Image (cartoon, rainbow, N blue to C red; front, side):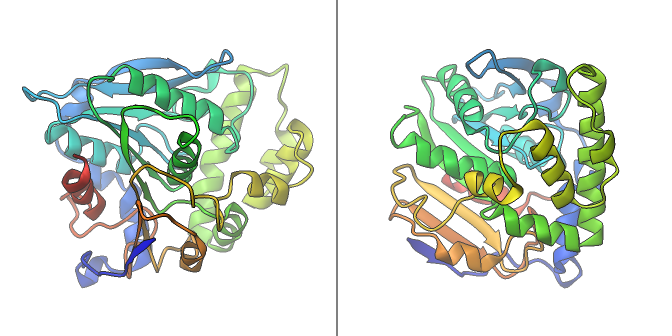
Length: 323
């Protein structure tokens, strides 16, 4: 494993606090200005196998020679409209890439597409969706990047891809990936701002699902809970086969040896001051030579912003490394 503790990301003092970085990652301020990617996007439904349908948005490059396709995966309770996805997509599209932004089940406006609920353990359908999108770009390289839970999916896709190759997938990047969901859940529950942000969005999502499938779901008691952990426990108890939350979390966590055999070039980007993901967990990963871990002193969760309106550090990094 190659570990970089370089501090090439140097935010100005007024943007340095992890809360500021984390807020800016999702702030509407960073959406301001024209976004040609959105003006040209085409909504797509992706066959993810076994009757599962996922939604996404595709934007072709406007350059004479496309540099490749970038598939972007958002975080939990985010969507293809998340600020960090829109900003990254806009920057890379402007620099010659096709962009595909993928929604997970029950994210964005996709609740109606599948009766079953979203669980972060549903790796297979996300993997198959990435495969299907990649097949439509078979003549060009494909690059995959994910944020937070999307970073977790990216890392698990890289591990799965070893035995089930996606032929034109060349590089993956995970920004602030969730490694241990059990720890991340506790950190969110202990942070009033993060708890309010995530629990509000999750409750709205569950209410939407219940409205669409009232004969299958009644989340009344769950919606009355006040922590992510307790909501998770009740949801699993009523609507899943998982015996408890720790078992569920372990199934999609990324630990120790889980990535030791990946063969695709992989970069993990995180910050020592991330309020959601403990940095020490990254040093416990056993990574092969093709993987690089980049730990920055600052950056918060999904942040890495050094100006209000310019590209984030990871966007510039992707542009340099997606070749």
